[in-house]
Amino acid sequence: MTDAELAAHLAETAGRILLDVRSSGLFEGKALGDAGDKTANEFLCHAIRAARPDDGLLSEEEKDDTSRCAKSRVWIVDPVDGTREFGELRSDWAVHVGLAIDGVATTGAVALPGLDGGTVLRTDRVEPLPEPADKPRFLVSRTRPAKEAVAVSEAMGGELVRMGSAGAKAMAVVRGEAEIYLHSGGQYEWDSCAPVAVAMAHGLHCSRIDGSPILYNRADTFLPDLLICRPEYAEEVLRLVGELG
Image 1 (tube, rainbow, N blue to C red):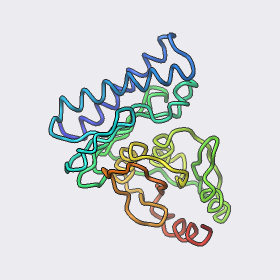
Image 2: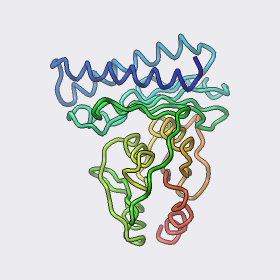
Image 3: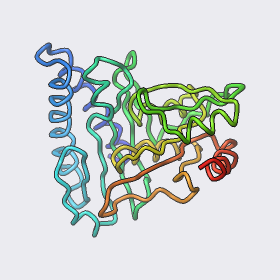
Image 4: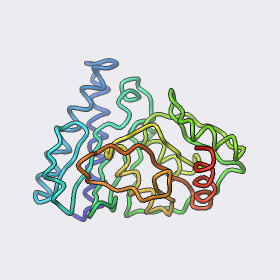
C-alpha cells in the first residue's frame, strides 16, 4: 500500500468509526467530542505505527515526542478536526492524515465523514478545480473571522463564508465551494498538514500569509497563519495582506 493509499484508507476508516461513536447515543456535546477524539486517535496512531514503524508521528491527541524531529518522514494527524462541530452534530468537521517529508506536506488525505455519503479528498486522486465564482468567497471561522480575511475580502469585493474546521474550509476550496481560505488566528501543524498536501496536489496556492513556505515537523508545532487559494488570486491576496496588515 502506498503512502497516499494508506492515508486515504486510515482517514476514511477513522471517519466511519467517528460516525459510529456519534450514532451510539452514549455521548452528547463536549463528551461526544472527547469520545470521538480519543477513539479515532487510538485507531490512527496504532495503525500508523503498525504500518510505518520507522516513521515519526505527531497527533493533536498525544503527548508530543520531539524525537520525531530527527526523522525525515513524519505522519501528522488530527483525529477530529472540528471537535466542536462533531459534538454539535454538524457536517463541517474532518479527519486529517498527512505525511511530511523533510518538512514539506507531501502526501495525505482529508475525510469529510459528515457529508452525505462521506467524502475523502486525497493527494493521489486529483480532480480538476471547478470554475470559480464571479466574486471571491472567503472562508472564515464561524465565531472568530480573521481580521485580515475580512479586510482583504472587503478590498476585493468578496463574500465571507462561515464554516467550522480548518480541513473543511481547505477542502471547500478544492471542491469549488469557495476561492480563498485566509487564516491568521493561530493553528498547529495537525490543523493544516493533510489539507495543505491535498490542496497543493490539486494545484492550489499554499503558503504563510507573508508568502513564505509552510514548514512542518518542527519542535514548536504552532503555525500562526496560512493561505490556501486558487492560484489566480494568490498575488493579489498576498499584496493586500501586506498593505492592510
